[in-house]
Length: 267
Image (cartoon, rainbow, N blue to C red; front, side, top):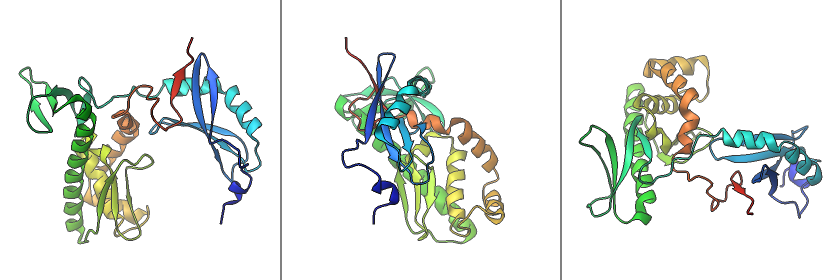
């Protein structure tokens, strides 16, 4: 059965609108919410989406006027987003919190590995043809994240005497980890970019939910007992968590389906 908010959507209503400001075009995604009482704008740092929330009875004309009136706000927020760091040669990527510069070794055997250069610089080396670099780095980071998170989760599960069912690694944008009612754990692969104590904290956090499916005082006591470094990890995430989402993005990636991208007006 459709939600009440959807009942007010016109069949021809677009999913996004364009806002022009200072010779740049910003795509703004429209979203109706049945509890919304006014028009609101927000920029999602993880996905670089610009989202305009509309009340159920709001009109497309009002939404367009509101978005265009706040074109300067949109431009400012988009410019404040961390610089994109594509998976490409020359990019410096953190691996377990340690910076590694991506180096292309086209004729080398293998896929992706790390090494220390003659000057002491840490390198992330990628073999193969240039079109495969991005995919190989992404696959490597997924594998490393899966290995570290599975090891940490199993260690914490053994510590409190619970059994793990399933662990999945995804590219989550709204949370770093989750625990379903069935006991399945899910984590963001981007945790492999953070220091090890941050990854350990998130693993302990979700394992704790296998006993306390809430955030009660008992949950936090259990988590602190399992992970004494949790406050340090939470502070790091508050300060640096959003920055992890810039890795793997290309500047002004117009080929993306994400509507928060911007492009210049030709001519």
